[in-house]
Every structure is written in structure tokens, then in C-alpha cells.
Image (cartoon, rainbow, N blue to C red; front, side, top):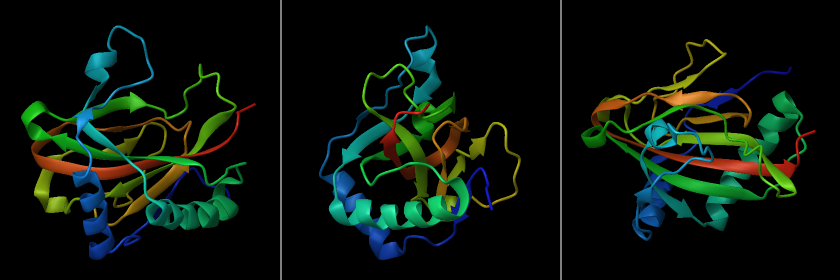
Length: 180
């Protein structure tokens, strides 16, 4: 059955989440950026990020992507991926306003096809910071630690401002031939 997104509760356990934090600790956090050159680009996103490179992590995500893509999306996608550890902190009202993950003006031969977001924080460790889709209304629980959200990269989404505490997530994008 075709659907716009899928949610997998408890996709990653505490030990795997701890390993993701250990990977992130090996990299210096930097300011998150956006594709846009619009005047408001710097207010679109406030977050700290670290790019991760890990075969076991990519393989774990890829297994979920393959299963969900076969059942729900039917996109031409490969196991090529970029993975990003993200920190949204209330001290700077961390957020990422409405956006999609496809870099439409890229000249690369591959486009982001499937986006994934893994919740790394306990839901009571922060306030605000809700993950939302623009065109899809749902009651799905996106806040539970270890929850994985998968969706086509063209679907607009956001993370609302964190008003207390810190929200951590892992986002990844799996690529395929250019959209046409």
C-alpha cells in the first residue's frame, strides 16, 4: 500500500543510540546550514550538526529503508547515504522551519530520495522540538526514543523551536538517480 511516510517505534535500542552518541562525540559540532540562498536562510535553521561515517549505522538504516521502500514508496534508491547527528538546543531556540530535503539545483547525478529521522532523546528531556509534516496530519508518536521516521525527501517537514532542554536526532538521506 502506498503511503507518504512510515514510523518504526523502537527501531534502535539504547546500546545502538549510545553508539551513535559515541560516533558524534568524535566529531566537532558545527552550525547546520541549508541549500537555500534566500535572504531568510539563516533564520530557517538553528542547530548544531556533525557528519557521521559508520558502516554499521548505514547498514542498519538501509535495512529499514529497503523494507519500507518496497512496501510503501517504490522509489529508485540505493544504499548511498549521508548521515548527520543533529542537536537542537533551547539556549538558541533550536529549530528547522519548513523545508524539503531535495537539493533541486544540484548538478549531481544522484538526488536524495528517502529521508530518515531517528529520535535520540527521551521525550521528557526537552519541550517543543516537534517533528511535523506540512501536508500530512497524523497522530503518530514521533517523540519516543529510538523511533525512526522514513519519508520521500520531497515531503516538506520541520522541527519546531525547542523551548526547554535539548533534542538530539540522527537524520540520513538515501540517494538514487535524479528525480524526473
